[in-house]
Amino acid sequence: MKIYTILLPVYNDWKNLDRLLSKVNYIAKKNNLKFYILVVNDCSKFKPKIKLKKNKNIIKFNILNLSQNMGSQRAIALAINHLKKNSDYKNKDIIIMDADGQDDPNTITDLIEMNIAKVSDAIVVDRTNRREPLWFKFLYFVHKTVLFLFTGNQIRFGNFSLLKFKKIRNLIHKSDIWAAYPAAIVNNLNKISRIKSERKRRYSGNSKVNLYKLFNHSSRVFSVFKYKIFIFSIFYYFISYLFFKNNSFIINFIFYSLLFANIYNFYVDFETKRDFEKKINFLKPKIRKIF
Image 1 (tube, one colour):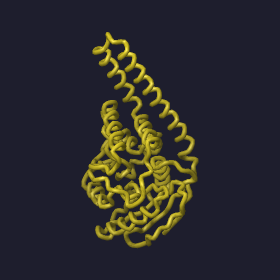
Image 2 (tube, helix red, strand yellow):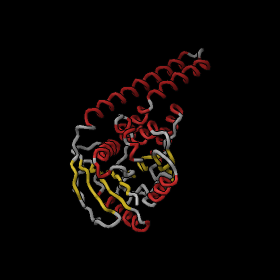
Image 3 (cartoon, one colour):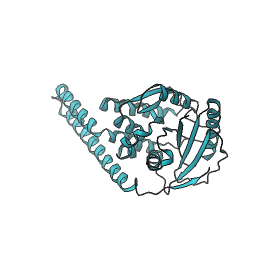
Image 4 (cartoon, one colour):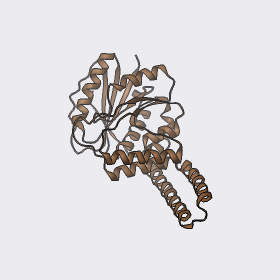
């Protein structure tokens, strides 16, 4: 039977992780699935307390401890880099999900069934509903709309996905994955399959997402598609010029807005690449073997 690796980035969310692991264990037993589990401890302030015990379905469980807080996207990048280098995980496709309960563990079986039935580089889980504050939903809608208008790409998924192990090399040598995992998937893989699942409520506690983090994440997503956005910007400017050429205020406003946005976009990409090259192979996460 094929073994899958479940990768879970965690920052202080040990109580929710423990509840999620019990559900994953139940699903594994019920469906006769076998998993390796790799938790990425993103420099949490609290020590992990794990109740899960080794059994015939959960056969390996390690914690990858990061020495500094990197954020979930870069924690995922470091973990994938670790999986690539560690022979124990070789050829084991990777299921990536959040540890707070918002990614429904019952969807794991759907991911695996599609992985068996369909040839894909990755299978992503599009969110059918978000249980978030109204301000978040509005800004997320604006983010998705602008991204589509300037790239032609729709990204309706987060971390929850199944990634083919053999496709790691398409991601790990590029800074896209250091910027944003979903954007890296769209920009670097060709065969992407999709399933839908409702975004659940957190098991407990409040989301750590705030306006500052949302803006940073959105900026990094856009930076992955910098060349597309630059080309679309030129196109939109010339279309605007045809309609508003007699109105210098509007033309200048559009021109300088697009110019500033593209300069900022390339700046974010430059900073991301510099940080990626500095840290991806030089940060040395420590492995804690649970079993």
